[in-house]
Image (cartoon, rainbow, N blue to C red; front, side, top):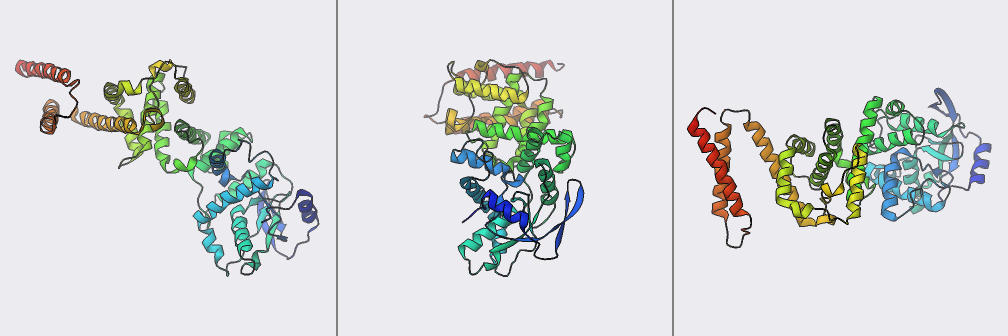
Length: 431
């Protein structure tokens, strides 16, 4: 399958091609409406545009999964292997969007021209081109009507012109799938960092909102990227696409945590990421909010039960580097890595230990919520003693000879001391 004619052949053909009908397409380009004539070209002529907004996130994931250089998709868009990789990415998208099913019906013909840059790259219509190419080369007889396609060619413009055109066309509702929050965030960051747009301009271009809202979305993306990095899944965006609101909540909480010590903020990140690893019922974003609300109690429980598991060895440079990455994202000063925890991931502490910590954290979150609710009632002490009595009864009935006894005696002494204090409070009747 040919994925684009050589540069000189493309340019020679496009510069001399005559309109094959009287049709024109109205396009808003460079802040003015223009009418561009239809051309008829071989389906092999156009090249996929590698800076295609819809595929930027998928390209990052492709690079990581296939061990390609970070500049794989940006070095030379004319290279066949790179165009082939883009074709594979687009092919997966055509399946997800239902375009293959739509175009595989032989009665379905092209109704809207592809929009090409002056050099023959597809500014709009990459997925349609992909599916028409696949069908034609699989069965040239049945899909003969895709051997040549309608295109229009834009005037000379820069990358910002193409980005604005792409956003204007593709972010409108049509038969295509909506852009995910990740794709929009990657596009916005790319527009700011690579094209020099302001956050306000990027927000307007990609229908995000204000410059402040755009910054928040990019921050949300970067928290998601940090999560993937700590899981050794760099840029594998498909793994977090469905956790939009969890990362949104974490981004919102950052402002509230500005006065927290860096160590405390890093620990919240670690526990929140641990919860994201294995969501359990309910709404993950609400669980992260509850973690924040009862954080001191949750950390106390986790450290008490899992201190040895979480302790970072003095020579563990990888985790010290990871602490630095998290600190940088949080915008704080460096913190002594020996005050932190190991990453709560299966790679660092094992599946079983990570699950135990997650269970402890979830139980502590629920206990903190219950305490907060009980604090608002006059029967707080009674309710908490009732709950404690139930827990002790469960311990009595559930004990087995094979269970661990270490630390139980000390816990009994602690409970007895607390009960004596409450007994004195009841007998005094005034305090």
